[in-house]
Length: 65
Image (tube, rainbow, N blue to C red; front, top):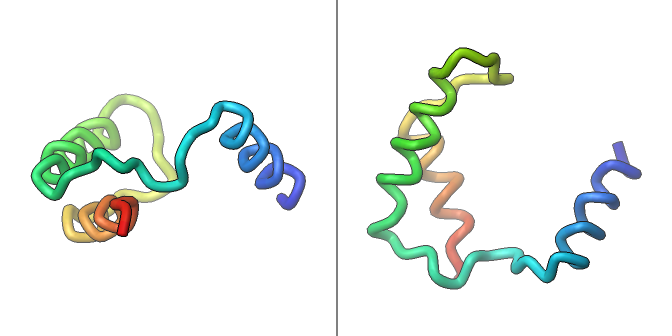
């Protein structure tokens, strides 16, 4: 698992992607959560279904401090 995680970290760095998206606004979160719920309900399996509250907490955690 460590090699996989390091590969993701390296890829993020090579692509110059920020750890936290600076333009993510509180008003964007409900739409992102709705899209995630719709995506999870599609025809392919997901590891675990999450509630709207769980997803909101996760996406809020992505916002830059």
